[in-house]
Image (cartoon, rainbow over all chains, first blue to last red):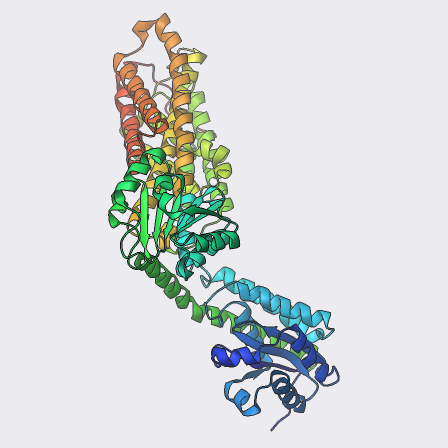
Length: 346
Length: 282
């Protein structure tokens, strides 16, 4: 086997593509464990080492002094995580050189994320790089690789539709509200039901800066608890119909067997807000809001199916961009690897 | 080589507006956002050419160039472009630039392609009275505002249509929000009504002084347009005309306002001295 040309840049780890959740939990490298790993493999063997630890992946990026150090790193990783070497061998992903850069760019661009094109991963990769810098384990190769990978990821996000359109029902609901109300900071949101779906929707609205959130639930304790958690207001469930017209967005997510929002109540409340648009989001099954509501002027009603269809269309649009995004990632990675080789006189 | 005339400049303006409309259409078809700065630049270039063309025409007719249907339609397109360049960036309404380019292109090109509209060239139609000139210009400027209002109303209708059919992606994704469209539409409606009211107020002074000089058809058509828009504003403010019906009403009113230009123009100025045909810049 011929010796590798240029610096021994590598990527080693596992992700949701290869490891189930139970294994990923074991693999996790929170800061203390990451520090322990760095301590076990000193800068003499691995002068450069960055640890990317998220709920979907644990990945190590580094530069090894010689190929044997990679085996030592793998053994140390298994020791720190308590995972058997054979188990790790079955799920591990490994690449070197241009392939490792290509992988990093794809990860930072959201191409490898469970939720294709999501943005959070970009910040997580930045944090991993910052930690490596703070630990003194980001040298000339990783500095260049990470900085260029960030530029490439931004380029991919800008020049493809990879992260356009929301793909989760809660985020689609919020995006929809924005198409009606624009800035949500003045929008008043009424949440009927305090279950999981309602909570997710409420959090999505809160993260987009919705002005005022109110929770109404048949079990008042649950309504108060969720309201407290979200810095919202709780409203007795039996009173919501009377105050319906005060809210711009009504989210139904109760477990009630019949509709709790009647078209007659909406029609009566509409007189108070005739010029203002009104959005009803029915996230419940069976449905919480009578479908007749959608016949009213200036009133928009979306149920779970409608939102799921939009999410599916958005996802399909993102997937259609994957090939283009991967081609861009390969192109950038190859160019960067050639620059690195030239710098190292290979 | 033929001399560069006022119409040449107006054709150049129309070409710019068409370029803006083509850019916006292509961007929409490709589901990509166009650059607002580029659209603004294209509209500004068109506006500059149109201003110069109308200036040359104004020099030729010795006054504000509002003497025939061609000039009235050109002036309406110029007003819409002026308003967009003035307040468009502040509105921050996506597709408004594209809509303005489309509207101005349609009006300019149609006016240039109908020779009959420019057959009768009238000089000095305001008899040197600056107030009457101001009255006419203000009225036409309000038509430009109503043109933008019709655009905003059209976007509102499309957005509402998409939302009702659960279509929010594709080209629909580039439309502004319902609330933004509603608020800006209301502002444009109020501004248009105020401008037209001011124009009528200025004109009424002259009419009271010399009632015989004002043609009845023109008077009725202008007051009819004003009353229709004022009624729409009153109904909107009292929340009786909202949503889709408001959008449809604004679009129909603009069509009616445009159609009123033809009888208004043909009803006045039975005979005017013909100006020199076209003014060459060299």
